[in-house]
Length: 342
Image (tube, rainbow, N blue to C red; front, side):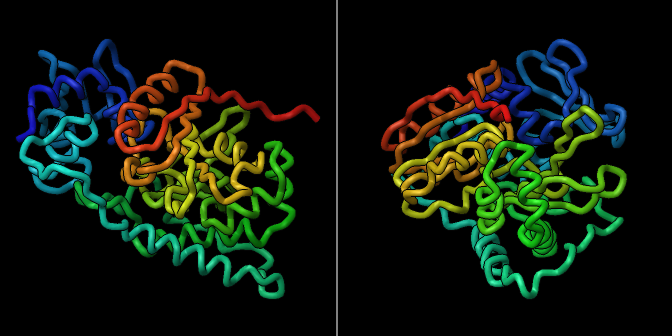
């Protein structure tokens, strides 16, 4: 049995993180312990009597934190309760004791197929002049929300989109060079990440941009571009449910967890993975506890290298508490990287 009072207390105490887990970055603060989500803030969320509650003005429905999880992620009420409890690290007294291993995510196998197709098609003589453009129907609507309790994964068509973006960047040597120079990376680092199936380029998202870096996850595709002086990051497909490059887990002895993909790329750029004994992964943002985190780090040395700000420090402590029981060791190394002067 799950202690629901403890569950609601923990969620209320970490409400911003809980809402980012469910909605990504689309949550707007509307006051003390109040938030708005959706078009023109159509969903109101607040803390009442120590419990997170919501009300949708669009359909007149409301409920508590578990109901909100079920509404957004699907599944039964029981599945939503278990998923929320897992997020909040509230134990289930009736769950079987002892260590258990999750079955490998179908998304991992799908991603491996994607990487294999990339590697098989990188012959220069067959490289097209430019990659396929995204359809004008592309939209920010998540089309593959998993049933609660199932591994987060994209649809096959979405994997194909990710593959097209990875191939687009892999085929364009000049684009790889331009991205690397702008960010202070080596071009070999950028090309290597296309081989992993982790980094691509979008030729356009209708109404948003005409070109953007694409970070490919098991749970979705994130775009990053600039609108004038503003840096914009949006989920094109899926959402922040998994670690970036988490599928690269093989026999590495050490795992570095960074806050964000660009920090992870900067660390990879140092050559830290050259010995094949270290894997660098990234959180989609500081407010996410990724699916499969414990399985990834079990029996390995873990280095948490997140930002030196309030959100980064909070995430470091939260993740450290989760991984310490299963990791061989846990070290904390604050991350502060700057593009080198040229």
